[in-house]
Image (cartoon, rainbow, N blue to C red):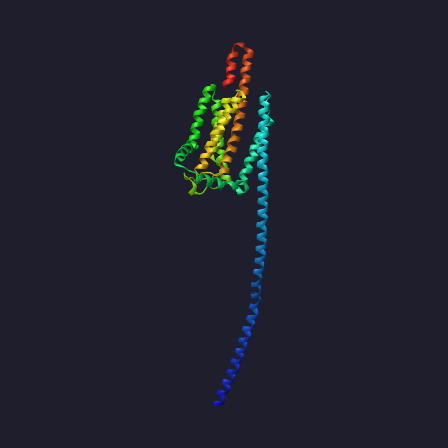
Length: 336
């Protein structure tokens, strides 16, 4: 009996040893099977390193591309301004010599302003070199504020807002239409101001530039910043009024009217900078956009005036008794 138990125990021990050996072998096998994944886990780190290098190279290429684009934009900005100034000077000389203002010169003026505006918008969007002076100018105005200047500045900026600009355009358009005894001057003025305002809104959305920091603003404004709507409205409104009032007048009078219009625009621009509502490049963009709209509007007014003058001269040829009326109409912009 004891021998049988010993034999059974020996069998159990032998089977247990086999089981232990089998278990140990299984464990070793498991370790062998697990080792390849452990080796594989070390590979992603190398792949991640390569991916990081590729990402850095891509970022560097993007920076180079952006830098190249910004440099090209600066060149286009300068070229556009140069073309506009050259065409404007050439046109002024042609007008002084009583030559006809040719369409190519007007086209060059429009082209120059358009290129300059687009280039400036790109520079502002990418935060390139042109915007370097923006925080400096903002800080200077913030450090030099005083109570006796802040009050008038707020009054000017309130009057030159969207509502104020529209009201002034309607009133001045009505007065100019009454002066010319025609609805056309007023419609051209109001239409040009409206188109400029719409273009300013679209440009703000496309560029998407943020306003200066809230702490630097006297009047809280949170919409997009480029270009300045106040400056755009002032530029187009007062320039168009100067063009309509000065049409057919001596060059000196036309020049004085345009200088007065630009002076008012600069005053509005300075108040926006003083109150911390805009960056410097915002008001420059407003001047460019407003000037572009005024240039197109003034050309439309000139086309209408030339056609009205042709009709008046045809009336004079038929009946010479209308010569005095035709002369008065040609100088005041009154239609036949």
